[in-house]
Image (cartoon, rainbow, N blue to C red):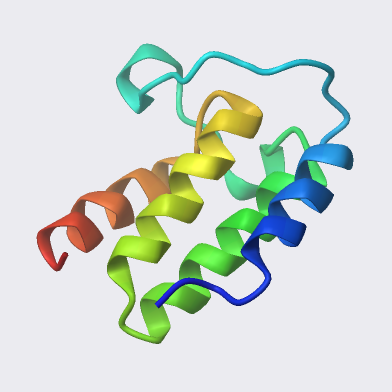
Amino acid sequence: MAVRGANSIEQYLTDNSGRSGPRARVTGHEQPAVSVDEAASPGVAVALDWAEVAAMLGDFRDAVEWLDYAERLDGVIPAEFAARRQAWLERV
């Protein structure tokens, strides 16, 4: 189950990320972990919230996709979400 309106949400997050141009995808072990409070853009925090919502609804694939999106925006996701990603991937 994909989050309804995800395309418009992704566009909003991209437009409001405070970044220009795409960032290369970076895996968690290549960058130091950051906390949610240290996330560089408000779009990342919103994407992390959507990941949690998807996981609460049992849609772990969608939750992981939201984490991937947050990582593309900021280059890294908070350490607690890196651990959640692993747990969610095991449930896909």
